[in-house]
Image 1 (tube, rainbow over the protein chains, first blue to last red):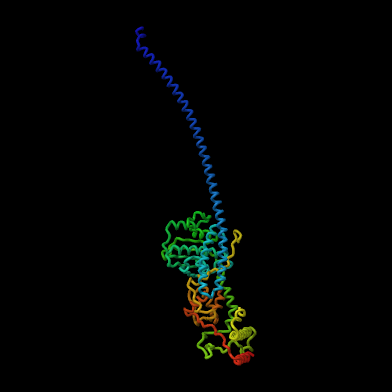
Image 2: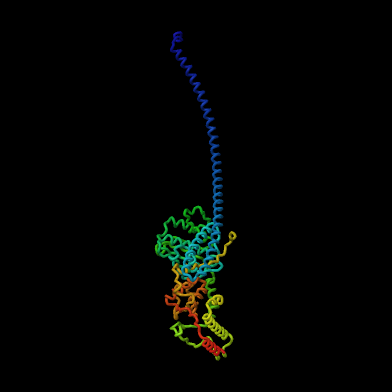
Length: 401
Length: 124
């Protein structure tokens, strides 16, 4: 036994054992502690994840709110920009209209001086183009387009549109029909046609023709614009189709720089007034064919254009008084007398203007009335003629209109 | 200014005169004077594709001689524009024109009296 006790190995073993026991206990404690910590950490993690999810939800809400606010601000900015532009363009439109009226007066006033007239016309041309731009922007901003009082024939609508673009002399108009466009549609159709013509002349080579054909179709009238350009690529076609068919508001900030608002203007006007515009088919010349189809509801029931009946009325009312006295056939000056007076060919009826006695006997009041007027006008003309010879022609002005 | 949503009225000429002339240069005043009388040449038919202005001139001049100024007045066009249209028709042979009537000369009183008496005897 003693030997055993004295055996150092045993002691060493004992010490080792004790140390091992301690170590095991310690490890166990540490293990326990670690487990506890882990559990704590896991629960913390769960909590943190919960919080994270909450925060993410919050951020999402904030984002949505932000987006909404941003859209509101954008819409506000857009609408206030539009309001400002609309009012500014309204002023420009009125000014352009005023200028055109002024030019109408000037053209009439200086009508006999070819050079002045030509200059005035070039000013007028520039003014018309400027007016078209103003109208286009105004339309995009929800503004008004002047309204005409009367209907206008399709031919005149096309010519009016032609006058609003730069290269108007390249445009040829062929009207197969003579219908009128109703008053409210006259200006919108003219503006849309002008935009299409502007596109057609801008995107085709200078000098090539641009044709406008106006044809009746079962549902109304079509204005067909053909150019000889290179046509449109698919992207432009898609963009045009979107702008022409969309019935929502046009975002004016998205029109690019320089702004290309032609199709947008066409789309807005077509939607607003109820006609249709399409581009994208190929013209016989290989360029673009654009078609405006004006439905029956926007055409006037009566064919005659407003300008014509007025002229007709005037010419029938006023012309006969001046015209019937001289019912000339081909009676022109054939020579001169010795005194320098013009020699005229003889007319068939000797004197149709002076009623012969047997004529007046059988004829009632109605026919003799104009005849005496005729006589009076002849005598008046004679008197004026001799007066003119005696007095200087300053008398002529105020007396005759 | 027009109230919002309301359309203003447009009253200037719808078709501008440079479109009617087709951007061509206007004839100088020597071609057709204001007083030149024009009328339709006999047995002419309206050219195909004639515009409203040419048609109106056609109707106006069918009745007899009318001065250039009168034609312009009836059409409501500047005289230069009317003159251009008339010149076109003239060059195509559709119109005849003669110079303005010459100023009356100083004729002796006796002749005038004779003419006047002659006229009076015709009428009475």
